[in-house]
Image 1 (cartoon, rainbow, N blue to C red):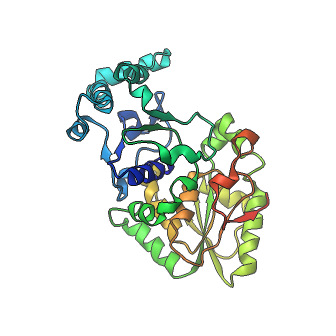
Image 2: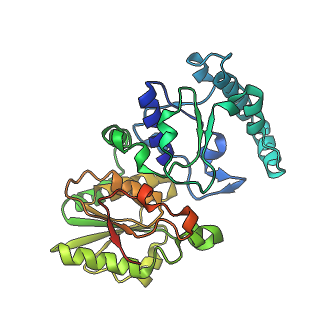
Image 3: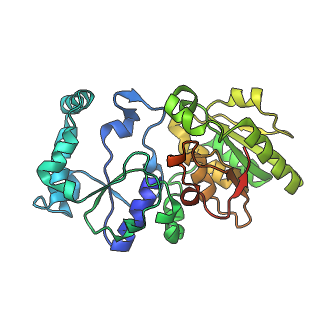
Amino acid sequence: MFMYAAARALAHKNNTDLYLDVDTDCREGVNYGGYVGHSFQLDKFNINAGRFDLSALKNHGPTSTAGLYIAIKSRLREFTVLRNAVRFLRFKGVDLPAMAQRISETDKTFFKEARGDWSHKPQFLELPDQTILRGCFFSYKYFDWLRYIIVQELSLKNSLSPQSQAVEDRILATDSVSLHVRRGDIVTNPEYRSWYEGVVTERYYRNAIAYFQARLERPHFFIFSDEIEWVKSNLDIPGKPTYVDHNGPEAGYEDLHLMSRCRHNVTAGFSSFSWWAAYLNPNPGKIVVRTRKMNAIEHLNHPEDFFPDDWIVIDS
């Protein structure tokens, strides 16, 4: 969603079309042959973008560098045997998409954000048409000036499931606070764990809960997590909290919507999932709380670029 919002802002500024480069692995939630826990779901929202494939050649002729790159990558994806060959060669250190960049000379039009280089880059909005973007772009400063359009386009296309609709009704009927606890890969992946250690702690959640208890007469906490049972065992949530556990990873977009419908939000540090729920929250009187740091690793820590100024810092 950060990638889309940044790219959408650049396309809007240049008054040009936006295309998404969504390959088969991305749609299926695969990275280097392994399932990452969720699949591509951006198309569940009212986004204003086409697919970066052969159909895009209607707008970008085959003689353009972008057109040639589209043609090469589309052919590599078109057949299962080619996709599998690309994946196998990637394991062996041969990057065919990068070779396609050089052949088509689109490497000259790439704007690539290095992994971990997540600070805001003011020159971003000066990039020209036909730029191909690669990166995470974890800063609201790229697109906050276009917030009203971003919020509209990141609304759901279709109606909620009956179970989610019932939860939304309860959310709207209470002084609701979403509380997001991310576990999963930040427990099992040592690199991701190093980003969160000491930043998102049980003390942080206790302090966040106390903050809302002191300011709301009857806060009703709605808990969202990929390990609900861990939350029940380790966090003492006051009142009668609602544990939202009916959606699987394939319906994560419904959980994000439900979190955004709560009146207030407890975000989970560097988690873009709860970040976007809070950012899309339309309540003009919302209180959003966040960790002091974005990331435990200092050179990856850019809270001034990641968190909006009006979000409240809670100590960990």
